[in-house]
Image (tube, rainbow, N blue to C red; front, side, top):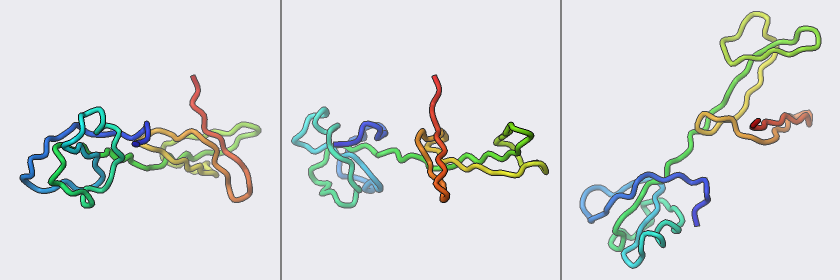
Length: 121
């Protein structure tokens, strides 16, 4: 069963003509109705026997990235920005993103320090 956060493209009818799809797909087998097909686990297109598939939809894969913040400390306050580095910047924080959004969670550094990313209201 696909995970709740799996994103899919639109269903495409498969008539056996043209190039086979590539990558991860969710198959709709001829013996299933659409609701049953929506519960099928995604698999790589190349492992399917396409003679019994009547439709498919591609898995939209997340784009992994990172947000880099640079900053400095002035007295007891820290100042960080995601803009170009200035000459007074002395520290860099790199956080993972998925589809351009920060990923909430706890990140542990090599010294055991924990950085927590939370979504606020």
